[in-house]
Image (cartoon, rainbow, N blue to C red; front, side):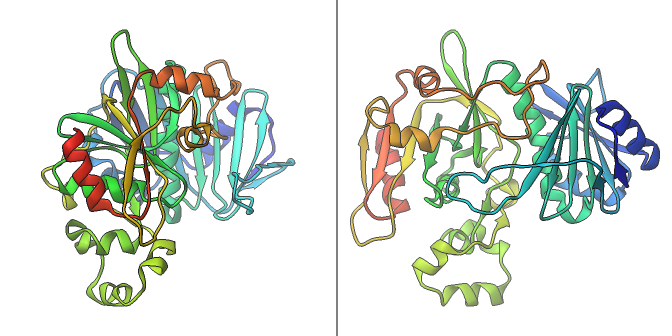
Length: 358
């Protein structure tokens, strides 16, 4: 299919006429309801399985309607702008163009195309082979809904441990997901794997999670008995022969279903935030250390918690507002206790400290 129009509405009409979406499901994230329509039963089944804790009945108007269209490669008949890679990255993965009434984003590696703006939210391309990108697109609509309501996006995992909400931030590869899953093994509830939205009410700070399963590496699985069922026996033997440093750097990812791996834990999407842990350790033969810090004095640590909204966010009036400033994050966090974790990587030691602190 060739997309030629610079008008979102005409593009949406052409796609829906060519690949009519006849099957649907509804999901509810907090107070936000999203209707998803698709032209493919395999996509529908995959989304139902992934979002099963959040499936909802069809009632009332949804906040968003998303249509997902399995199709051959989509060509865009006008120039696209490459998105500059994130800090520390070199590969260009996305390109985009702003329309008069929305935006088109194309994933270079997969050929998936996303068209969105007020009233239209469309994914088209080889969707069955890239279901994870569809899941991200759905979750991004929920993030947009929360940001439009005044939330601030943060880069962190979140759990509820002993009744208290804990956010876990850190530099890339520091083990946010691994620590959160170790806490689940100790009876914590799960809030979010990699994204939080902070909402300030009159009397408390809330962290809202995203319905995204943790994507973890083999080292995390090997060191958490609750996760062993995610790997075939022969893979367990193969990974067990690797060094800790090799496992730490391995980029093979597996989804960890919360209800299957941690049947006593709940998947929550909102809880008050009581503390922020920032991982700043590395594999070395040193003891773990955990100290309170002030982010006013440690802007380098604040950077681990900040998250730009990226290409998939258009504000309620059709343009992308400025990302929050350092001061916005500091004011939102307020008097929330912040702990920096340094020294050698030792998840059990962190858990022991958390038991005493919380």
